[in-house]
Image 1 (cartoon, rainbow, N blue to C red):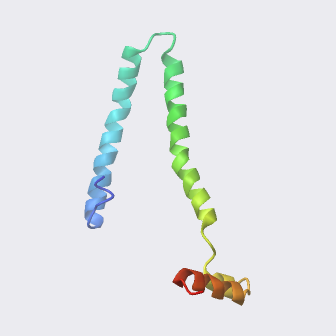
Image 2 (image 1 turned 30 degrees about the vertical axis):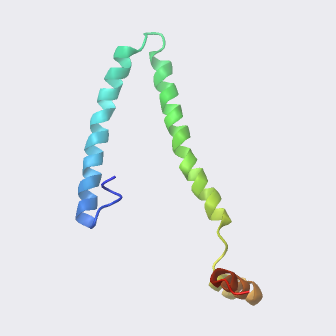
Image 3 (image 1 turned 180 degrees about the vertical axis):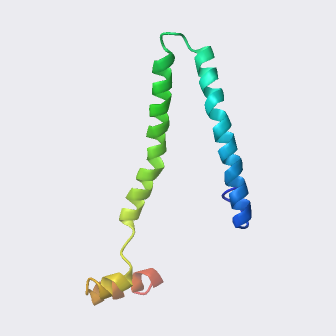
Length: 100
């Protein structure tokens, strides 16, 4: 949360450092907790399942960004200069400004 509301670059570096220390400390602790509370025969299966869930859930925001970026129209300048479609670029600007 601190990274998102950092007022300047120094605070951003400090908040990212704190996150790194927290994640770095969590890795060994979570492995110990996992091995203490799981059965001997399910220990590896539970660790593999949790990693698969984390990777799968982490892919959802990425897929949403890809989908939403595909829905964004081209820039009017690109449409006019590169694609050569002046009418489409003009219409895109009119649609953006709400002009009919």
